[in-house]
Amino acid sequence: MQGLSNATVTIMDEGTTGYRLVERASIVIDGDKIAWVGADADMPAAWRGAASLDLQGRVVTPGLIDCHTHIVYGGDRAREFEMRLEGAAYEEIARAGGGILSSVRATRAAGVDELLASALPRVDTLLSEGVTTLEIKSGYGLDVESELKMLRVARRIGEMRPVHVVTTWLAAHALPPEFKDDRAGYIDQVVIAGMDKGHAEGLIDAVDGFCEGIAFSVEEMARVFDHAKKLGLPVKLHAEQLSDLHGAAMAAGHGALSADHLEYLGADGIAAMAKAGTVAVLLPGAFYTLRETKYPPVQALRDAGVPLALATDSNPGTSPLTSILLTMNMGATLFRMTPAECLRGVTCNAARALGLADRGVIAPGARADLAVWDVRHPAELSYRIGFNPLHARIFGGKNV
Ligand code: DI6
Ligand code: FE
Image 1 (tube, protein in one colour):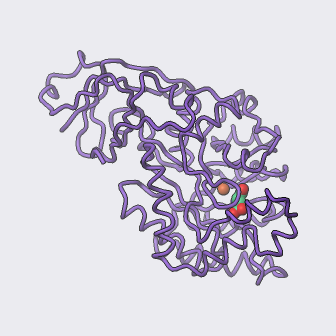
Image 2 (image 1 turned 90 degrees about the vertical axis):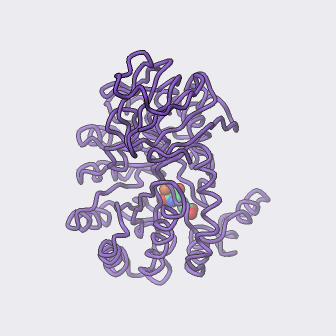
């Protein structure tokens, strides 16, 4: 039994979309769980003796959760970024081997150790900003072994660092050149066959796909989801990022945990998500990098009661972003989300987008994953740009 005292604790009550602060508060931790939280003065006598760390009024939030990343990949796309800014046309970049397939080539060529060595500094940057749960997708291997290799690296990250890693099977990310005339063959031989293999090895926590004109159709993704369902794996979808294919509605119909991106989401998708309880994961880093001008329908999602989450989408092409705090700031400034919505977006609603019911709030019984901040109010976390006020990160009850 140990405790934190003299804290400003951020409470996010169920059934609300805001937060409230309890000042001069204590949190009692028993093992890896929160045993009690409340005003110092109200602490039950039984816990008064627990060793306690005086936080001197600092704000405590749940540990942050980045619920959508592609943080494991080979190489980078900095030269492609540079070429584009020097005026190169898209075809030129493609001819020079650019785009998503350049990340696929580099990922296929890299061994586990190399992928790990390149991903860890990015992961460490997120941890330094209070992240305690991190989702990592496959999707740059596009053959069974390379996709599984990516998820093995993801699992290794969870063993090497004090962070909980959730893995997602995203073989349906792009069609590799060797299957360019055989879409159904790719779905059968790689997406589905690899899902079976990865599931048998315990490498897959959820199944995702990129549903877009340049990637996979609603019908193709429905087939992938039907298979995931047979294996008992939860599903989620990259939907309505560049156009409205009505993928979010299909995903919601399959009970998806989340639909992600959503700039082009229409009323049908919003209604279906509200009905199914599917979380809207907004990815302002990709919006920013692509200089998108179409905004996700935040007000309509709010009105419909769809929970909003925010994530980095950390990836080498459209969101080379490894700051969850900047993501919160972008959620506020670009998408007009309130600071409370931004914080819920990287805590309780992000937990829900991952199907994790045991975290994302500071409440008795929840995992003791906490972030302690050198701020007086949690709105500062969304307000500042490029400033990291993390004071301490507590993972499973341990100060790490
Ligand atoms: N949506 C995106 O923006 C990225 N993947 C996805 O499903 C693009 C990935 C890349 O360009 O590497
Ligand atoms: Fe993504």
